Amino acid sequence: MGQGGFAWAFAGREPDGTPVAVKVLKPLYAGDAQFESRFRNESETAARLEHPNIIRIRSVAKSGDHVYFAMDLCADSLGARIAREGPLAEADILRLARDITAALEFAHQQGVIHRDLKPDNVLIRSDGTAVLTDFGIARAVSGYVASTGVNMTIGTPHYLSPEQAQGRSLDQRVDFYALGVTLYKAATGEVPFSSNDWFELARMHVEDPPPSLRKKRTEISKRFERVVLKCLAKHPDDRYANAAELRADLDEIEQKQRPTANLGTAPMGTRQREALTDPPGQRRTWVILAGAGIGLLLLIGLVVKLMR
Ligand SMILES: Nc1ncnc2c1ncn2[C@@H]1O[C@H](COP(=O)(O)OP(=O)(O)O)[C@@H](O)[C@H]1O
Ligand SMILES: [Mg+2]
Image 1 (tube, rainbow, N blue to C red):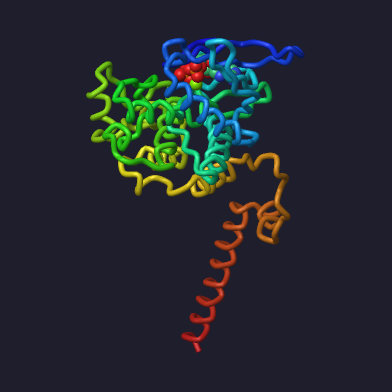
Image 2 (image 1 turned 60 degrees about the horizontal axis):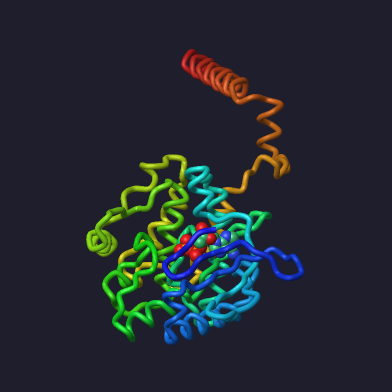
């Protein structure tokens, strides 16, 4: 199906015929005992995360020289969908964002940070739900890099948080930054920061404000843009502190956007009934006539009084 920095991904079948995705560590890394054990440890950690929005890992194993793990096969990925269809509708993005946030909330509670959230790691089941994959794999790689000094960047730095770009200590809030980039890409078809030069890109993540989302895609709501911008805050303290906070904001947008057309009409009040039986224009004429009448009576009264 494709390949990442250190593994190939294949579509395959279990002996009983169940379709699966199989991720096989490239021989270069499978031959390295330290990397291999990190990879296995991290995939076993990921395998323990059982949640409807996290990919189910079916087995972690070694066969001959091949280290691999098998997981549920998904029909599609967010990355593939954006490549095919271009920017998605806000309602679609919102639904996916809520699924991803539910997965992050669960994983973070177990102390697991994703660290490599991006559209290719957001898989989409045939029923449209989003499923996160590659939990913790980035940690296996970065831990390996730290302990061996071997420079092995995994994949794209477009989703890298400023603190990761600067090699600072990180926590769960890196996942909100990467989610912000992912949502931005889903809404506009483009990542907020782009450069072929790794260092320039890292600098942009650290220093540059993201280009206005609503300028690129006017139909996106202000509320939604605000959520994306909060995720993209440079300092982790300015982002969501936890996934529950983010979920609350997403729920609110969802509620405000729910169409009112099919909710039925509200019970009618006296005013509304009056408005129907006695349209405002006609009512105004009556008020003017009544006023003129009273004025005329007062005037006659005054004249009569003066004449006496
Ligand atoms: N379980 C899966 N079901 C369907 N597609 C998958 C699955 N796992 C990975 N893929 C797809 O296979 C490709 C390669 O995945 P991967 O090796 O994780 O590299 P990366 O995530 O860096 O692109 C990606 O396009 C990904 O979306
Ligand atoms: Mg992946």
